Structures are given as C-alpha cells and as structure tokens.
Length: 334
Image 1 (cartoon, one colour):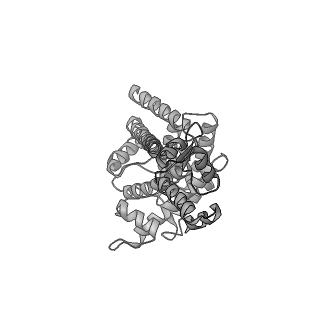
Image 2: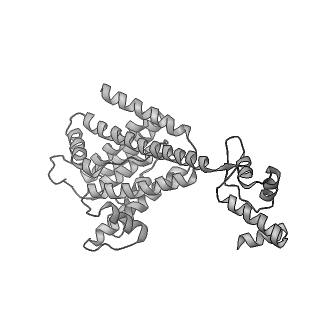
Image 3: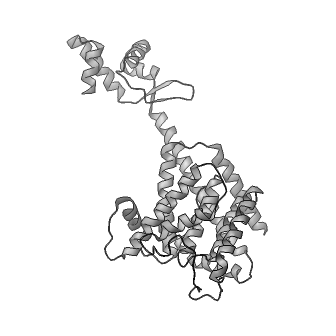
C-alpha cells in the first residue's frame, strides 16, 4: 500500500508539472492527441485479439488503406475505436457535466458499428461467460439496474472529489464486472476510464499489449474477491507512464525552441553581419522586406540566418537598378 501511495504522490507531482505548462501549444496538443489515438486504438484492440500491428493500425485509421491478410472486422475495429476516442476528446472539450448511461452507450455504439449493429449501443439480453475464466457475470435482467446504480455511484464520487485516478480505475473495473454488453466491454471500459482521466486534466492511459496477461489476471483476481493491489498498481503505473510521455514531449519542445532561438540573430547581430545600420534593417523590416522569425523573452526581434542574403540582395537592387522598396518587395516575393 505504501508503494502505491508513493506512486499516486508521484502522479500528483507530475500532474502539477503538466498543469504549469497549460495551455499547451496547439501543434503539440494535436500531435499528442493523434499519437495517443493510434496508440490507444492499437493497444486496446490488440488486448482483445486484433492482429493489426501499430503501423498497420495507423495506415487503416489515417490513410483508409486495406491491409492484406487482415479481416474486415479487424479493419473496422481500428476505424471504430479511433472514432470512439475522437468522441472522448470531444466530450473532454465540453463543459464538465454528469456522465450518463447514454455516454457509455454512445461509445459502445461507435465501437461495434458495422460489426454487430444489432448489439451496438445496447445492453445484453443473454447470459455471458468469459472463456477460460471462472468469474460469473450478472444475469442480463439485472444489467439495466446495475448500470443505473453505477452511473449514480460514478457521478457521486466525482462530486465528492474522490482521487480521480483511483476513481477512473474503479469505474473501469466496475463496468467490466457488470459486463453490460455482449462484446467490447473492455474497450468501452478503457475509453470511459480515459474520459474520466482526461476531464480531470490527465493524459489518456495506455494498457500495453505486453501487459495483457497481467491486466486480465489482475481484473479476474478482484472479481473473485481478491486484493485490488495488482490491478491498481498496473493502472497507476500506466497513468504515470502517460504523464512521462507528455512531460518528455514538453521538454523536447522547449529544447527545440531554445535551439532555434540560439540559431536566430538579434537585429544588432544582423546589422553587424551585413554592414547595415540597425535603423536601416528596422526600416526594411517595417516595409515587409525582411521577415521577423520570432521574438525573445524580452521582446526583441529575431531573424533567421538567411536574412543576411536577403539584405545583400536588397542593397544590390537598390544600388544597381535604383528600384523603390515596393519594387524590391515584388521581386523578393517571386
């Protein structure tokens, strides 16, 4: 228990670091979301037996390509899960409201669309057993009541501000234990877990393909009345891993910006390299002949090295052809 308390403390500290960088740059946010969409689609489907590789999943989702030797359902599982994750991202951007049964049904409907339309977005009406497991799932007649109670519990815990990492993990566990659908309970539960985490400002969490057996065994252990420790440890570890992915991306972005700025020239440095006055360069910048690439923290204009050649060209055009700045600008734009 002490180990997991320490793990939660580390997650909380890393979450604070992420919050300190908010709002993220738009391009960084988009890149991370696209990466997680493919990674989550690949891993979540792989846990359920889908044989598409990570690269093949990306081709199916992003390029709408068909992979030879793979079934139609495997292609649809990739397309559908990506669409369901996009719904999760859309829900995260909206005002935080109570989660409803329809939220879960909508996610499940997207996951099973065109694969099993008769059961997509509908609670099961039959008894189910998990192959190789001794866990007995609830009678289908009890599912509607169990789901109604689950939603009440979930929203109450969110209001009471239960540790949201633990809440997300518990919500996932409760949903797969109710097993409300004929198929795709795991995929739906993992998406719900991520919706709860992302609404709280956490990155989405990934259960790796290599963790499949540990993950399934840990869930079954709790369903049979055993300790939750293995299960929670696995989820907490996955949450920390996602925090590290985000922090690493932020660190790399900061390094890129620093390196980029080191390669840029201040107006005085540019003037010295071109034997022009600062006033002249400032005038040409204002006239639109020279492009400012960035600004320093102090607000100073920064120029790329290639502007040295631009300035030489401007001076040459002025001296040789006696052109106006407007005429020079037109030439430079060619």
